[in-house]
Length: 146
Length: 196
Image 1 (spheres, chains in turn yellow, orange):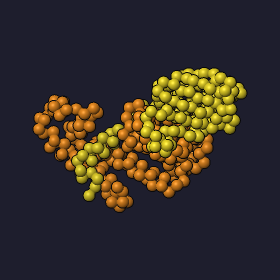
Image 2 (cartoon, helix red, strand yellow):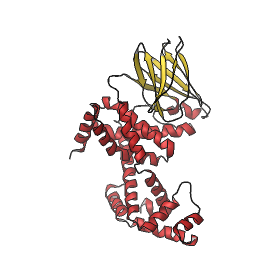
Image 3 (cartoon, chains in turn green, purple):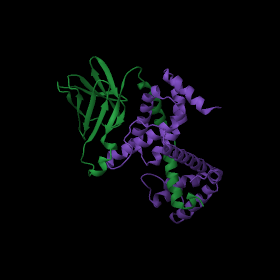
Image 4 (cartoon, chains in turn red, yellow):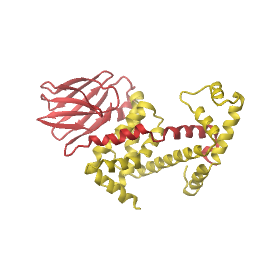
């Protein structure tokens, strides 16, 4: 007996196998990721993410915006994302610059107001990171897909 | 050759900025990442997003990776998490560990990794088995798996065989696949190591 005695199971596994082959595009993207290696720059870690919280099971989903938070050593960054807009706050609040960066480069930046609030157009898709210029130095978050 | 020492050396060189070492790490682990993405049935942009995110996160993770032996587990766990995130992007309902940077030190993570590696081997065996088939049978199976699906009439036209013989030919092709060296070898290994 094997899982492949059944024709439909075998076809389904074959389908998965054909899609699981390494593609040139995937290889290029994986190699290119190395260009984003940073040295001695503090990485702001993802502290919470509504898309991975159990709360999402209780709330009846889809309508709730995605909320993510990043923790740096001097400040935190809270971000709320809906279909068209990224709104966020740097805490403690102060005027600084926040940008959204994709693997192809920055796609938008905004100055925060004195309470740390900012608003940016939501990126199109694919992984992004946020970079905050705080007291003259750049702090970047982990990469994530919004 | 000591695989672990080897990965450790590659990680060390990549930390120093050696692109070639990084490319070798990609060659080593990209099959696992691709297999897991396929296993989650992600295609197109969703698949690309997960792949790109996993490698970007590994670049970030290089500096604090203490134990090269944990790398396959870290990559597998990160890929699984990112797959679930992307699935959530459209569905928004699931429960997984909220930890964003996985730790690879729990027994159940070892079980999950074994399962992931088995899925990779299964996919590789199936592709090797397909390569053993005569061209016309391989083409038939590939056409029957086209996305979006092709009507039998179209498959019939493309292969120049009657619609009525597609079903029986598919059955024979699958039998031939089961009897291929690749699948028999895989299943022989499976019975001794209790694979599923």
